[in-house]
Image 1 (tube, rainbow, N blue to C red):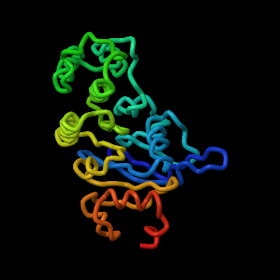
Image 2: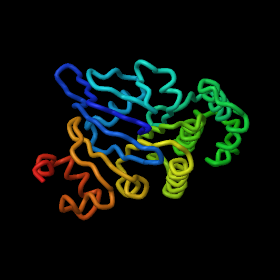
Image 3: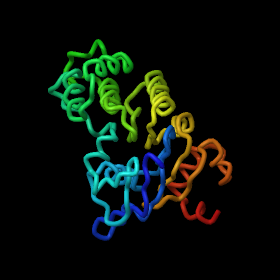
Image 4: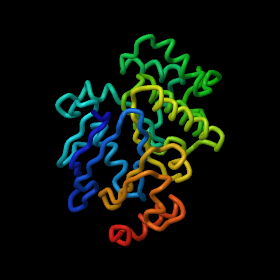
Length: 246
């Protein structure tokens, strides 16, 4: 059974089809890149998986649990990090982690917090309010929060966008370790094609709300006559019809 199963997912705003009947799975230990230009439907898809938006058609299940008929149980097995959803800035790093840990009913919470503070190099920021941290430091706190409950499904929307190259490399390593060592699967959006090729086992390219291409990020470009994943990304953004013809 896949960790995440999406089938026939659709979302329409007035006369704009944001997501147009997409279907895909994420397996245990798998990192899947959800790629595409701005407006392709990536964030809308993630918001529906999180239960923030209700789809107009289709189904979503996490660990075999439909997220609408078993919402609490399904969402409790999920966590999320994105650069556009900062944690409360008036709370310290430790306070944020403790509050979210209680919301997720994390057992041995104090030990879990200490482990994540060390893992994400946040010990010295323990008592700092999140609002005064740099964007990169806030991103690391958000990533620590996303792993509090050892989720079966980890959703990451541009998780390293605010990080310097060295820190981003360390974070990629930690996320690969999460996928390898735990049961969980990861759905990852990024505009950094080097990062995607380095991390993801499989990629899905969205264009105008539909999955246009799917495959191994290391071999997919050559299948469409492109030298790099970045060249393929640009083609998806500018010339999607030419790729459909292939």
